[in-house]
Image (cartoon, rainbow, N blue to C red; front, side):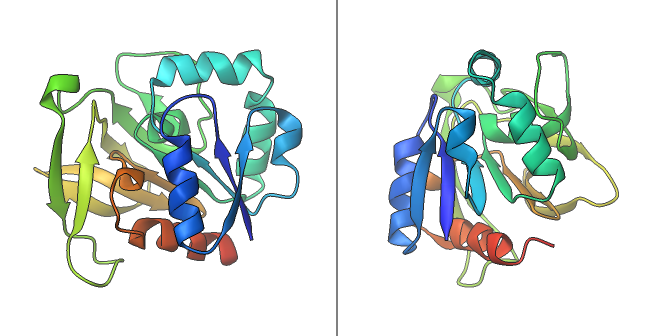
Length: 191
């Protein structure tokens, strides 16, 4: 199995370390040709408008949209979740629009309001999942095919739609591999 990690901004190296800990090879994705032969893709956190601009500058928007529509598993964390969303409240910058969710950026506050929280995630065995929230969005609306996987304070912070997974937090900044393993299982059987 080979998982691509969009390597334009954010904690892409930490995602690669997590994938390595799961026993899976990864490749940094910066150009359209880097998408060849991948079994899945992770879009890490960072600044969503900057990542959007870089996707456009490097010609990655259309190839990513096509692969996502064809069923390639994609896992977006924080800004990656924003880029997957069909709708963003109070914003109109370009995004992939692959997942039938509406998100609100910086829903939990700015950088100084960053925090960690234990989340109940029934799809993961072994107890609560420690989530790191940094300028995190939350999911304010979901389409009929979207399953909410975790909430915090009544707000959806993790969801799945088929082969697409969105988390408002940074699972790569913990030692807990379970959410990455969950994504890898989606990548093995995406439908």
